[in-house]
Length: 81
Image 1: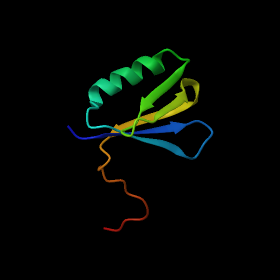
Image 2: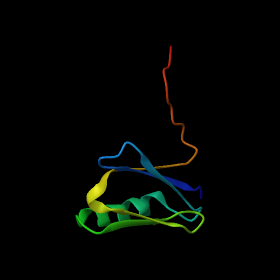
Image 3: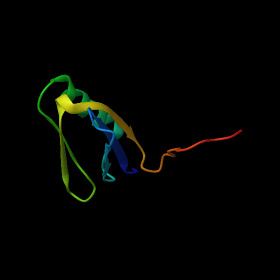
Image 4: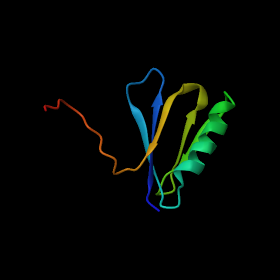
């Protein structure tokens, strides 16, 4: 299994929180867990990164959550074709 990258947008902040989860992470399972936490409306979304560090974001401040591979291409800038 490949590592899973989680990107969290926080309200009133231009910065994103980027957490790379370990090899054992399953994107489908993770999505279900995140849906459950965010569906509650309050509390904290906790994730543990591949180095064992815990990251907590208050549910009320979560603008969006993006789940993908850390190797997914992220394009920035101008493109021409």
